[in-house]
Image (cartoon, rainbow over all chains, first blue to last red; front, top):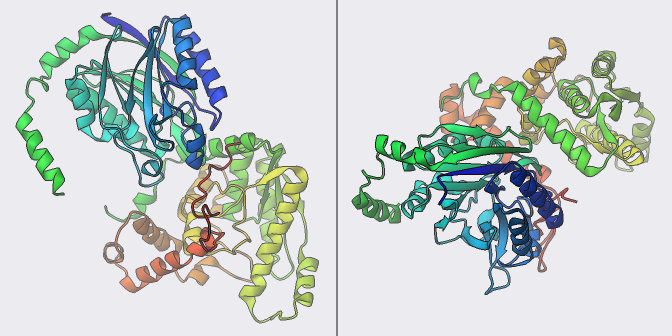
Length: 277
Length: 280
């Protein structure tokens, strides 16, 4: 396993309902990532289709494996770069059950996927109408280290990142489609999730405007002590390449021993009280 | 949360940036040649004219001045011209009086004394002119409705609210006034009393029976899920007034969410045909 990896935060604006164009953009930027010696390139939530697609999601969703993941597999194989991106995933067992999924593909093929557990259905969000929630956190042992996945609103629920970390993730990747009025929340949450878990956190958000929703960009790599190591522009498309040095985890974990100090019995209490809210 | 004028303060540079991005992207995606807007000389339309011009360039923006004899005010025309000159947008003046008079003459049940029904003809006639220009010149219509009047239903259905985009509809009137100054519009114009110009000497605050400074705070409280009692207590005003504002806000939803039918079939327009707009 590498001690240091290079990753690219590909903060794009997706063309809604145009998978072909979005796949082309993913390909171009993966080539760019390779040119910048990146091991991993990360694209935003639902970057394959755009975020506000409403009922068109039923036409756009694909199984995994499917045409989109096969295309990305060929891009990863050709470039030697790992790719994480977001797509609406159609269940293989049913015809209209869809998940909001983050997919992780390496040069040797499919590594894993994560289905968003917390689906916002309030304010401008209507995800529960369209998606079934996932039931598993995800952390994958790869040549690039142990990398965990989560999606956007999951960051509001510390248990997702905590569990991902407990499963071994040293780098937690959060892909997102967050509109600008929520920027301040995510700027706090990304730092908090990294710090409380003493893990790296890479956050990659959409940019651009979809039906008046302005995605604020601001993608970033946060250190295990909560410092922003690299940051993309607000609001616009941007591409930032940065380094993760896993050696930074040990001093952080020693200095802020949140994992050592975990109190499992509180989790039982948490379960009990959340069931009776 | 303490309801005080400070809650309505905004980072105006950020707001300007977001609105300009919204306008620019919408025009680009739509493939339109530019923007048409009604330019009354009031603060809302002047602000939208300025924002449109800053977003896509004044040469791609037409401000239509649509006076009619009953509400004609040379000061409004002067103000509209001043905005057009400052932000380098094109203008045209169309006197809509003859068209209005034709309506008055040819509607068998027309009632001269019913100033609201008559005034709404004016707002809808202005809409027809604006959309003619948009249609003919392949442009989009940029509306000037603000959040205060939209929440209160203080507009003409299918009239002044009709637009392809409404860039300042998420800003209360008092916020629009501050944005206007921020954009470089004259302070006097930014503070000008608002009127929909449906009848002579009409003023919005008189019609609404409340000052915008108070109304905007009440609406802000409602937006933030506060109860009428909490709002009344914090603003030190009567709960009856707050309830009246709330009731007017709720009862005007039919003006904001149009196209209603009975649910009869599988998927229905306005109900469960939930399609993305402007994605193509």
